[in-house]
Amino acid sequence: MKYIVKTPLTIVGFISMYIFGGGILSVLTGVTHLFSEQSILDAILMYFFTEYLPPTSIEDVILQAIVGSITAGLLWYWNTAL
Image (cartoon, rainbow, N blue to C red; front, top):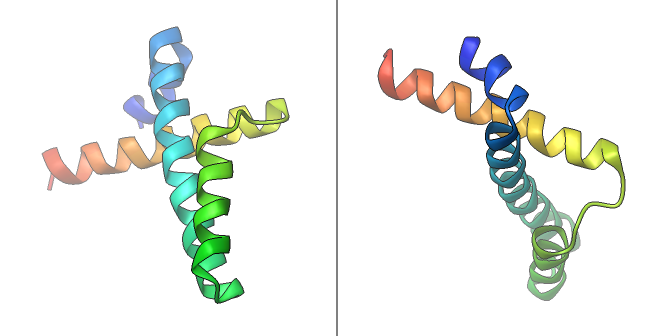
């Protein structure tokens, strides 16, 4: 919990979790479009749009940091504590 909560409260931690969360969300968006659209080109385009274009609102920035922080914290816990 300490890693998940305190990491995004620092500037470097927030930027790291923002980048990590953005990558995770772009892969998930691409995969969901691959299975829902049934077009590989649409899924690839959606992946690149969500990966390389900046977010359009502050909620997107915060969501990416939260997703990155939770995922990184859980991965850190599973790799060190278990």
